[in-house]
Image (cartoon, rainbow, N blue to C red; front, side, top):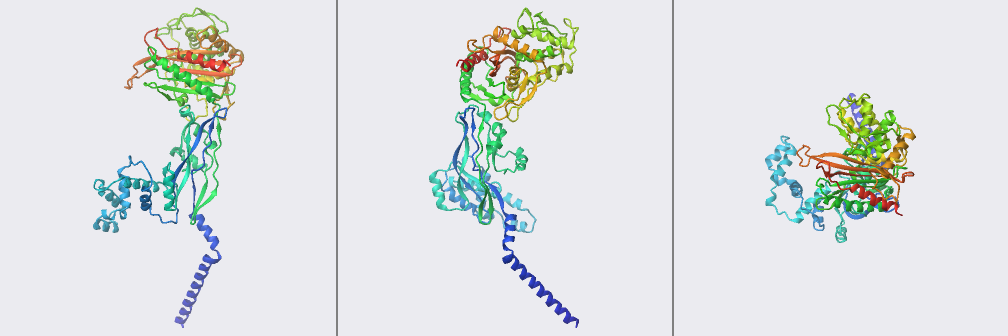
Length: 639
């Protein structure tokens, strides 16, 4: 009886199991097929992007194209998940058709293709080694290592076809399996026709876009580069939902305005039935700059001419580069910016990008800012006259102006670039009881007073220009009586050309500091100099006198424009033989200006580091800053 009950139970269980199995199969294959198939698709399919959308163009202020795109026929390969792909055979077929440069192919690429095209290198492994592998006594990685060691390329018939097939095989197996693999950029019509006849699924010809520059190297260094997402930016682009396979801006303007320029690549789903378009691609938007390319080209022509003359002048052995910036002080917009290096053979290299990341001692051009310490701290009075002389601080040789300037007030001190007047302010700040050869007892707080004044104009801090990776100049760390005097005349801290531009623009804009801009960030106020309007106007009067009768009187032709500005000369030091030791003293020059004086339309700077190698007190230095400025301002204002 018990056995009969067990049998009935077993039969009922089997019947129930069979019924549930049949129902499950029915549910999967018929009733809920669509639902389960969708779930399968969602679980197994991948979204991929193809880099076929052109970036936006970069235009000058008048709409002239500075950076454009050129479409190039490109052979692309994409593996589809459910297809059986014979990579070796495809590589061999394409090697018969494509013209490829294989001059730099490495041995590992050649060995890999040999192994894969010869039954995965089975002939390179002994039976004993394979048995050990099956018994898990040696790892698969050890077998692979043995295979590569035993491929003797010298004994193989390595011709161009084999090299091309090896290269193609490496390209189609590079990266993720579902990504596009670029086989050849610039495929010819004849090659494409022959490849189409092969009818290989996964091969296609795309139009890839490359950047072109209608004006050659002009400004090319600040346009920046494009490419695959850099490793340091991967997290950012992942969070933005951008494929790491996308083409993005990797430096300077291309990076700063990447969201605008990039556009959107088409998105496809890799399904079991092939590629399905999910999202259409979209061309990037154009970026319009404040740059005026006509003015830029004229400036470049003038600067190149003068740099060639400067290189022929005496004492110019260590001179090789200059910077010029022209902008609108009322908005912060940059109109032209140029850095040029002259090579020994007389050719030029664009180094405009150094405007934001190379710094120099600039000399007396900063006196328009440092005199503000005297006004703010109540250390000087307007129209107070003193006799230009020298300062002697304990332990330091005496310091004087570049020549004896006689009776001067605050305006003449700027006009004639008196060092003594600036030293007088520094001594009154640090030691009100200063006497000849006494100590000043300068402190960090005294240095901070100067640096806070300088930074309020833009000197010694990041300007905020819309170019990534801007660097500031170097602030000296040593505190001493001698160095605070040097700081007051621009002979201690270093400043970048863009900082110098922001400084003179701030003065032109009545003490209001604006963010320098090439693109869409104009009219952004960053701060204001902590001086009242009366004192700002007093400084501007001094800068006007510089150009009227002072050290800058010949920098512009007064029949074209009335300008305000400041000259500067500084001592620089070089390591000319690369041994890590300073061995040469040079002279660097700088000039800042805005014009017209009463209603500024332009602000302008020019810097020429190491224009002369110092040889005594009367070292000749070519007046490149004067010559360039005079010619360029004539071009700007004669009409």
